[in-house]
Image (tube, rainbow, N blue to C red; front, side):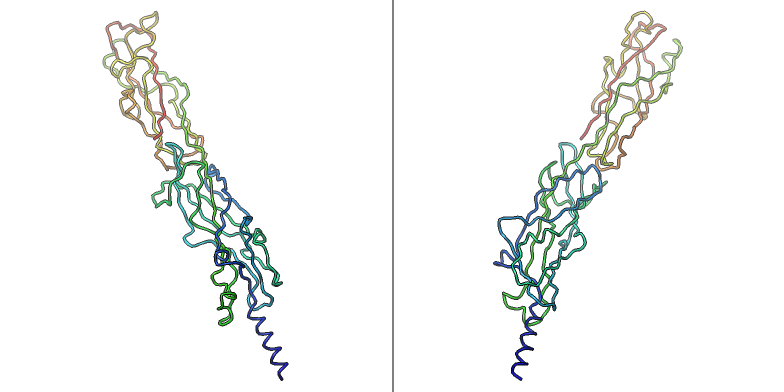
Length: 338
């Protein structure tokens, strides 16, 4: 009878000890591991990086799994709560908002042999996780913080690597046996980059319909007979990374708002007749302070898109030397980012 009771007692104890626990001090059992920075090229807008864990460190963390089967000899991977972070990434006047969140890749657990041996934490490198990111449009929420382009960001969220808790009521309460507080916190670092949204204006010409000499003083604003000029915008992100506008600057010396005739009084020139310009219903002053909006920061903007001007021109005299002939003036279109 005594032998039988002893066998039953030993068997029951082994069943109660079926689980994994982290070795070392409390500091080792609740260790923080920091991953090397992951470069994130945000040009794709919405994407993810699948990464393997890397527990290589000088701390030599380890764990042990006790034989038997009442509690699985498993270590699990999960993401911390509130796992959504928003950052403002700045590159001079250019900036964007990005959302970042973490997900464990399946399977989110690892089984280990119940051999009572000490296993190095590098055996947990088989865990994989997904680092998700999404460029935000028209974002108006709360950001975690601001970072410079290609600057290091340590996410507040982390991945939790934790053994399945011992599930008995009485035998896991000693400091040696209780693994309820055993966990590794795996922190992620990112280095985000992006290509700023830019718009350009190449040399273009427009032709204005001719008018009669006697109609000069009563002429109206006229649309060109040629195609309207266009700005070309490039946005690999599909979103404006700044406020984008443009203004006009006179190349032909202006008199007031009138652009002078570059042909002067040479043969074939109309003499002292130039142009007044209008764009989108506004009289053009050719001052940098008069800006025409292209896109606001955070707005959706298609890559390789054309933005058409809405120019009209009116003939205007600025002197007495007026003849039948040609008028030629130049104006510069300057793109502003702020």
